[in-house]
Length: 280
Image (cartoon, rainbow, N blue to C red; front, top):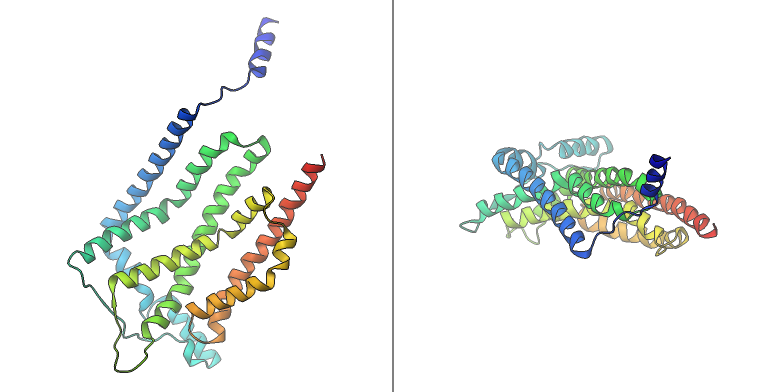
């Protein structure tokens, strides 16, 4: 009986709430672990310079890049010569004394961040998790995996599709034959990194929609009503970052628009659950 009573007391006693400073201390350690993970991957990237630059970063500008070869095969099949990315006379130069070393450091940190992204998301969720309800905790693991996968898919889609098209278009665009394109290393790197990261974040749209619907900021009807505006925005973005042909634009728009439709479906499910919970 005494054991039963003691167990009941333990169950009834609420968990000790952490103070503000304890929360800050907890957050600090989550940040420290995330930074350590990023630095570990950054060091690995730094030590593999040729792999990171020759095989990954600089590869999209070459005609032997896998996407460029596939596009040329499709161009031959469809008789669309503008789709083929052939040998580009794209000369990348360094104009700063410490430019190449600083670029090496910068890219190593970016690679470290991308590689450690799933772990960073896990640390964020670990910090938020205690504040969630029991039902929400069930889905926290799935949210970590989903957000990590979506980001990685966005990075891969951007790297293999959008980056080659962007580099080819802007790298070969000339206002006159008298003006030769000599692209600075900094400009090339910033273009590749910004485009890749931007699309990676765009692929997180379903996660953002999930939370915005959960807290009642957006609804499925709102997303449906603005579907046509989103399509126009996507077409404009595709027209800017791709060569001036319809096939390339469609190649970029379809996955992004599919992502928006997926977000609408997710918003519907979350909204229905939210309505049921409010009625209960």
